Amino acid sequence: MKKEKITTDILFGNLDFKTIEDNPDFKEDSVREVIILPILEKLGYKQENIIRSKTLQHPFLKVGSKKGQ
Image 1: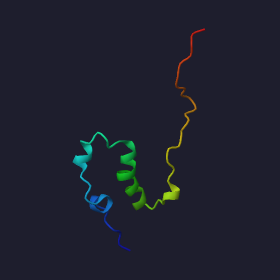
Image 2: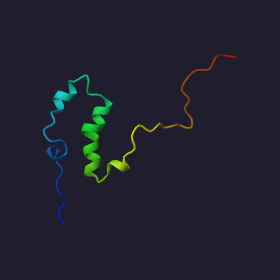
Image 3: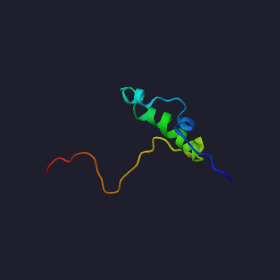
Image 4: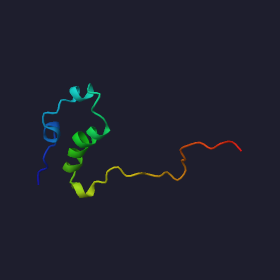
């Protein structure tokens, strides 16, 4: 069984990376949908397997401040 060579054209079509690099409106959500999603789909992940916007909690990190005692 011969594996298909994955190219940027296969993943991203005619996406111009220079244009998005210079675009101030191309933010995290755009990166996720335009760049990351095609990679995940090519790896075999389905929409229902991809968890979005999950809040992560670090057991040792607390953000905020405490008033002095």
